[in-house]
Image (tube, rainbow, N blue to C red):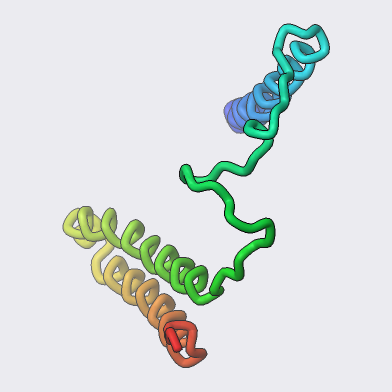
Length: 131
């Protein structure tokens, strides 16, 4: 029992080591190939220019970005995640309610209630206003 418990941590440790080793190894190999002159390094003004969506930059300064777009997008993602959690619950509601009864419905009412409180807070704060 205890061996199985620590074996699961061993698997997590292996995945964590791989998650660190693979990118580190790629960076080290890239650096080594540039030191050995296998990977060419030919900078030019075209290669060093900023490229975004195929448009050339017009000015050197950054344009101001309206924060409201970011705020609305963030709120959309938060409430979109609600649907991700709601769909599996709705798909298995019949089998879960047979096993757990009204507890399943109450849990989802609490979940949606918390999200509604967040939505009301954002609405009262004015985060959903464009003007």
